[in-house]
Image (cartoon, rainbow, N blue to C red; front, side, top):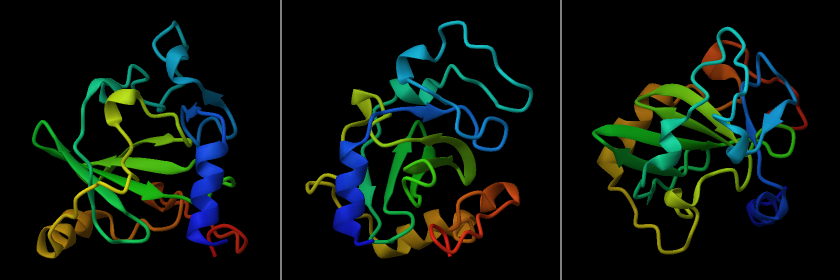
Length: 155
């Protein structure tokens, strides 16, 4: 699948956010449902998602797997592009740790459009430094020790 075709599919799909791919595969929440009395499963994490209120200023890395980064309150945010539609469109990493998965347009308006043409580039040296802690997490699920090995989406 070409990158242009993947982006068209991403933009055309319905927004949703997964609570956790590991604990609730295939189960998704709309952004508005988060914090509206949704029961959390053990180990899923905080579903209040304070990240949705942040206003990141995205920068392009030029990396095919981790194309966008931002600094928010002194922390580095990195978006990993996943093999959509087999997996959520993106995974958000905060300071090198997975925070949550985001499907297509599931981001809040405050996030802007990281994949827009006007996103400035991050300098190469800084890009390498920011991506170093997650460089080994290219395959979906690798950040939790269960990398997808399906040859049709991640192989």
